[in-house]
Amino acid sequence: MTITRRLFGAAIGAAMAAGIALPATAQSTTQALTSESVITQIQEEGVIRIGLSLFVPWSMRDVNGELIGFELDVGRQLAEDMGVEVEFVPTPWDGIIPALLRGNFDVIISGMSWTAPRNLTVNFTDPYAYTGMAILANRDMTEGMSMEDLNSPEVIFTARRGATPAVVVAEQFPEAELLLFDEDGAATQEVLNGNAHVTMTSQPTPNREAGRHPDTLYVPFDTLFDPRAEGFALRRGDPDALNYFNNWIAQKWRTGWLEERHDYWFNSEEWADQVAQ
Image (cartoon, rainbow, N blue to C red; front, side, top):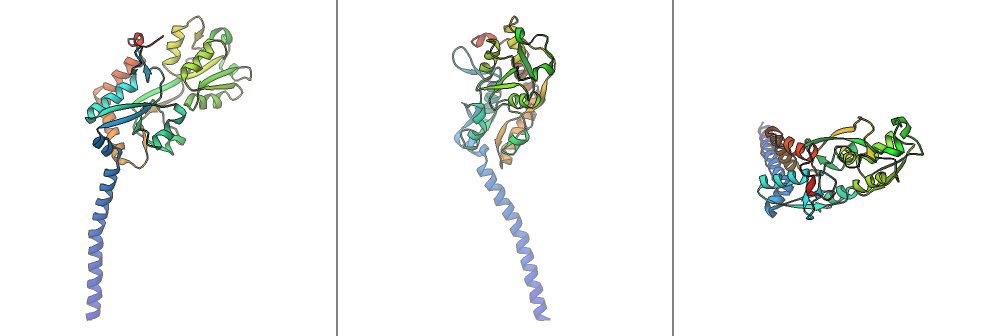
């Protein structure tokens, strides 16, 4: 009987020790995650570094060479609300996720939409903006052509390298030739110069370019391709950062700030005189 009681007591003691150890382990894990979060790093360094690519009107340079645009407004307001400075890191689109993973900056805020392959590499926040893509065409080269007519080996598309339009063009118009460029502006210029028939890019760029060059460019179809939500992209394994950014985005939706800033940059031309034409 004595042996039985000792064994029972030892078992109870082990169970109690395990019960105490589990919360302690969970607490230490939580503390480790918090200390390793990019939010903690931003607070300690007093600056948030934001990766972005330049394309109108998300992010662009004004006539004085300063960065302006929707993403710049978002990034500056985010930094202000965090009580830190902001540093923007312009990065080519096709290398922006690898640059994030290397630690070149803390978060991507650059009109990046969710895709399954991207989400295998980075985490996405809740949407802070929504967009869709449209076709912009050379009037003389394509007028009278149907969308089916564009899926032809004789038709040349242009798109920005590594961006969603390049993927959509390859999927929707597999028979057409596709030329890739580092910037949306270069892809559009090829169509304007008559070296390509059409390009695809996110609105409002097609409407804006057609308005600037009505004799040469036009938007032939009302179709929006691949409409989707855009989120911040951050390194995986950082629940504190994901929680903070999601709550910040939700609050800015509730106050109407995100909608107001998006309308200013995407549904008006009030800022047009700030950039070189």
